[in-house]
Length: 316
Image 1 (tube, rainbow, N blue to C red):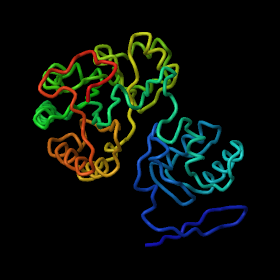
Image 2: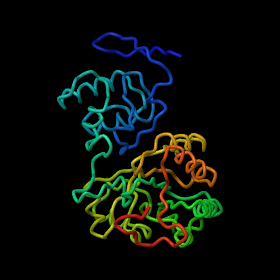
Image 3: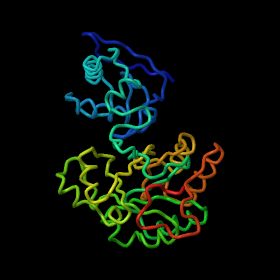
Image 4: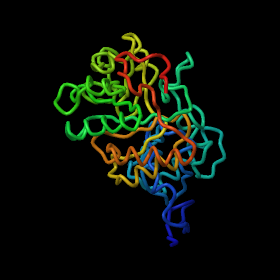
């Protein structure tokens, strides 16, 4: 199907024709999604990646309504940014414009540390893929079922519960580690760390982060200052390279399809314990689907207890 979209341009109205569904509308972009995973955006596009574009432009001085809609005001802001960055002023947000907006490279956005540790990839330096799950499971029953399934399928998951979750009845770090699963932290109360003072950032170091030496920053939001503050307590950032966007309400089939069709070697995949990817059947389908593409999941602690403090290099 072809849809017509009209936007104001140069004082007039221009009709744009595009095939539907638009590439942008079916993709999810978070603040640290690599350029290689972002769609090329044009006037008329809608979706989460447009929302992220608008937020990025606002951080550069624009004053857009963040509404998922690439309309005339967003088009004007894109052109203004391209002009200021010395790029071709065409209003199309491709790789060069995305890279200028988010920094870093096509594969690794900004905030890679100067020591060479890649915060999006964490301590996995192998070709295997790490599946990670944030927040808190819906119940202890679902948590235990997933941990048992991962052990049976010879997979090591990385679980990143909040401090509130760790203190509750739906999650057990001891049980997860005893069954070969890695536990890191996700802050105590899930704030945006960038908005906190250094002292407040340090105060957000939850038991899982302190014990493992790694924290998953809420919302994928951190910067060099946050990294330094956490580092004073021996904690490193471990973010992700590929975001499933499961929390937007995707079905299990959609999550599985996204992971199995897009994952690359050495990826850290972001999912959440309370959403549809956190199930034994999804895990089995992901493992099988990736194997069909010649890719394998992390198997760091198969048949043994995972350590509390993680090594600098995870033996996936």
